[in-house]
Image (cartoon, rainbow, N blue to C red; front, side, top):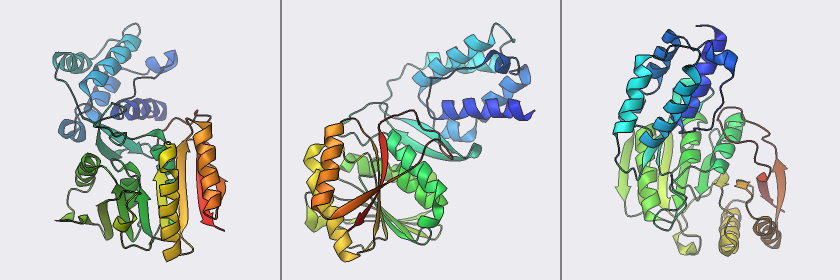
Length: 325
């Protein structure tokens, strides 16, 4: 297989793995999608061990395969396996509350983070049941700056289902990662995602949370409500992370208060918060509250994808480094 054929295959596989149906195939690329190329594509994606064990949404598979076949049909003979997988997706009419998305790291189909998540924006009163674009952006930036996290104690606020924390634990060799959220259902799915991505780990459950030993990385999953500061973990992190955690005006002061408490424990902690700015006023309010808590900010750059595919066309996005004045 030529380098171009492989590039086309990996690009489409990445989109299928994460359930992205918004793709375009150039006519010259379709000419390279031969019978053997199509067979390999099916084998490496829909018939791969990871997809068989953790299947992607059948609805998204159906939409993806229909679109792919419509592109191929006018130019190439369509492989029987593509039709078979489309029929399989069309015959599965089960309602899916959850499915799996697989995020390819550095264009390596053997290097994948698998997440159990929902397609819905809100589930059981929380937005934490899916991987949001800011988490992908932050994780991509982290992979570009691994040295900032190596051998460090890292605390993540508002971890949701765990993409950023899992990426960090898997690829950056931190000393420890503590992932937190305030919703029981979210924490349950977060723990399931840790189990999926670290299948051979040692795990201990207690009333305080779940503790893992992940290849020399200590990993904790804990309940943390920013309004209940007595519940703050007894930690002195070197780094604090957060993705898409400043969208609600009502939580800005509690969030900043939590940051202040951890900075009181360790004055030189570095804080990184990634946001897709949906409401300018809310984000400006966050910056103002930071100022009142004696923090200052530096905007960091992550202009485009490096290791993880995310939508870099978002005009209103921001990655902040926050420090105490």
